[in-house]
Every structure is written in structure tokens, then in C-alpha cells.
Length: 518
Image 1 (spheres, rainbow, N blue to C red):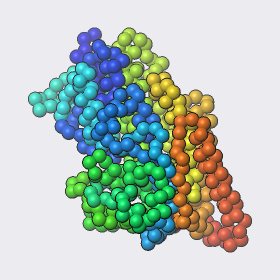
Image 2 (cartoon, rainbow, N blue to C red):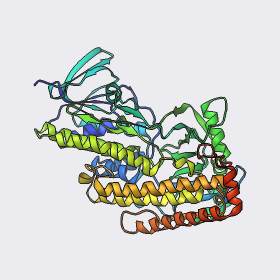
Image 3 (spheres, one colour):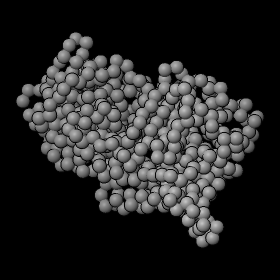
Image 4 (cartoon, one colour):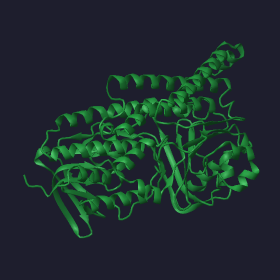
């Protein structure tokens, strides 16, 4: 059959460009066309990489030198908790790393990263239409896919053996075929902006003002992904190369409502200032004009992610939650897997089993990733004790199950999706269990007025998560903290006064329970 191209990719940002680049490296003869609708990339909500996505970018995509020169080295994640808006800064609870990150991770400006990756794909031999808008397409399996695009020069139509959807939230194939599914169990929304004149977390002024705070940490707090935590919401604070700071809020609409204000930017800024740590950081900060964005109904997935002749990658296949920055993890798994599948198909190999695996395993991975890490988490993320237990267990299990294997053999492990097989289901079941218990403990604390009572007066700085057996030390610490919270819960159940309080609040489900001030 005659095709204009072997593969046409809709979308030239990270997932589309990475798929194209990996495909050209695996099968240099592949004729690849990338269709990108934007003349220039804009900044996106996800700007922080994890150990997993960083492994993909450095070990497989070969971006180490570029990332080191054009983006910031990330120094882990850090969480801040408070009980009231006027709480002294150095009385707020801090969770985070004491030392520099053991594995490379980055604070990235997605617009420049996407542009660089697309340039690499074009330099590798991919054709590009930009700006170009997909006007229609037809999927015909082995007979070939037809796609029409509108450009400045008019409309063009191409035929290709494979069509890859890397269109992000637009999810053009999933929506057309009826596979797009909003995740209504997780009603979260996001508002974010870029700021200037944000205070430096590591400045001399802060050292003079908060000496114990400055001396406690051996790495840069400023280059970490800092999180302000509250009941039903969390805020990220991410520094960017050049001095801008990305800051935003993600909140569960069942629990929290963003304060009123004249516009989204001022509402976001007012909320940041309502937290004592945010007030210290953003007191003199200014929002960059025209750089305020929002998304509602963030999570979604696709019920089917491929068939003979087409496949979806990255955010076009699904998205869950930006907490822990998993978006680029999914982009890494899906783009590498689909690039390998396409390379083998173009080399004449039968790939029916690989298509079946992708269709069967992706929904499992998505569902378990959601249920283990995010389902109803916003009910307890404002309680420092409960969230610290979750942080240690979540990140510890992430290292044991994903980070350690992928650093041993990235070419092999990026072809296997998380929670694969019986062992993956068992691990997923254990993680779902402790997440459900933490939700239940938070509900009890809300009903008895104990929620967030330990959100003051302590700091916990970890040695750091490392990809070897030492990570079990932090997992054990998380287990002990969870079990101590269970003992506290037992005392609340057995205390007569607490029983009466709970009885009086028996109709206060997590959806209706009154939150702590923050």
C-alpha cells in the first residue's frame, strides 16, 4: 500500500516529540510527520519532573546536558502545614529533604523543553506542519489512516499506516471514538500563574530572621517544589530558570472553594497570602500580566488507548492529579512504549499482542495509580501527621516499585506499565488500604475537632529517598506514623466526650465536615 508517511503524530509537545524522536532512533527509516497546532508553545501546569520521568529524559532521550544548562536542578519536594493564618512562620510544620537530591530531577519550563524536543525530532528527520489544525481524520486499520490538516497554505490530506494522538487534553481520537471518560470521582480544579519578586527561601535576610530554620537544612529550599497544604487543597511553588516562579492551587470542589475576588489572579494571590508561609514568600510578589490560567475537571482517562493503526500517548490517554508530578511519568511510559511498538511494526513484526497489552494494562495502571495515591486524599492532606505518613509511604513505594527497577534497566522497564501482573495488584491493594485508612482517620479527626492539631511546632527533614534498600528506613517511619495515628483514633473512639461529639456529628461525612481554618 502507498502511504505518504509511515506515522503521523498529532501534537508536537513533549509526548509527541518524544515518541517521534525515539521512533527515529529505533527505526531510522521511519517516515514521520508531526502536526502541531500552535505556532509557539505556551507554558503548561506541569513544570516539575520526578525521578522516573527524569530517568527517561536523561538516560533514553539524552537530555542531560540540555536540562543542566537551561533548567534548574530540583531539590526534592517540601510540604508546609499551619493551623491558622497568623501563625509564626518558624512555627509551621515543615516536611522535606535535609540534603541535596540523590537522583537528577528538574524544575522545567515546559514551553522551552517542548520546543527543544521538537527541534530534536525535526533534526532527526521528522517532517513538521506548524501551525496546522487537524480538520478531520479517518481510521481504517491496516488499510491506512487518512488525516486532513489546515495550514496557512490551505488544506492538506495525508495517508499513513499509523496515527498517534499526542494532542494532550484535547484527546482528539478518544473524544471522536467515544472513549474519553471524565474522572468524576476526583473533582479537582487548578488555578495557576507566574510571579515575579518572590522572596528567596535561602536569602541572607531569612537567615538573620529565622536562624534555626536556615541551619536545619543542608540543601536549597528555594529549588525544591514547595507545597502549602490545607484541608481540601494544596499549592505548589516552583522556581523557573530566569527568575520567575510558578505558583498555583489544586483543590477538591467537594471540600474547598477558592476565595472570591475581582479576578482569578487576585483570588489565587489572596489564597497564597492566607497561609503564613505563603505570606512570607509572596508578600511583595506580582503576577505576570496575562499569565494566569485555570483548568476545571482535571482528571480523565481513555477507555481504549490503541488499535491496529492508531495509539494515544501522554495526556491524550489520561491525566490524574499534579500532586507528586506524575504527568510526565505517564508521558514517559506511553511515548516509549508506543515508539517501540511502531518501530517493530514498521520493521515487519506482528504487534497484535502489544496492542492488546496496552489496551488492557493502561486502564489498570491508571485506576490503581488513582486509587492508591489520590482517591479522597484531599480530605487528609491538611493534617501534617496524616499527610507525613502518606508522603513517606507513597514516595517509598514509588522508589521500591518503579524508580529502582527503571534505573537498573530503563529500556526494559519503560515497556512494562506500573501495577502489572499479580504482584502489582497486591502492592496496589496494600497502598489502597492505607490510603483508605488515612481518609477514615481524617474523618474521625474532623468530627472530633482534632484535625490538624499537630500542624505546629515541629520540623521533619529526611536524609532523602535513594534507589536502594535504604528507602525501607523511610517506609518504616511512615508505617510507624500511620500506626500511631491509628492509636490516636482508637483513643478518640474510646473517649466518652469524643463519642458524644461524633454522635452529634454523625451526619458529617467527609463531604460535609467542617474544615480546620487552613
